[in-house]
Image (tube, one colour):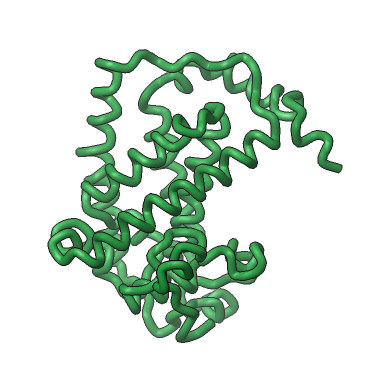
Length: 264
């Protein structure tokens, strides 16, 4: 059953297709930016449609964590504008400048095994979870950091998908730095790195989506290991709780874990 997990041949056809047909794109410093930004808006779209449809889709609204609070057109446009502003004026120039000091990456001939991909993605998620927990905790405990950098993200106490990247430029750059650096630290294959980046975007959007669907990641992972949208919704209502972005163990260790309240 698990014999194929360590076999490089499973992903080799996919990797060969990407490597041989899209070499210039994949080697560009802009590719990770294009990948993550496009993934972000695509992954926000289903939740955005649910928000727009509102009470017309009552079968969806039964899963709304705060059913009486829905984003307005102005709040959606504000968050989309902040996201585009930060990426166009900060992230994109930084990526373009990278061409001046960093040569295009070489694409390895061999694909990673499924086991390497799974281990790499989990390792990156756990490392990012620890980094962001400490960062997040400090920005709530130190008033100057909160007011200067993090307050914009708490503009909305009922989160929604497009609020995920409603961040200060400092915060977005910091998160992007860890997302880029961690796969290097863990010596991940480029394919593993890109899969992690997209998955990290998805779970971040899901955390902020405002819906607790039966197929939410937190419901698929047992024993309360994973936080998910309900617990992050609690953080936006009770800002001194649930600082970890994904998992629950750091909040439980530091005594900042809070159970769901409201509609669950």
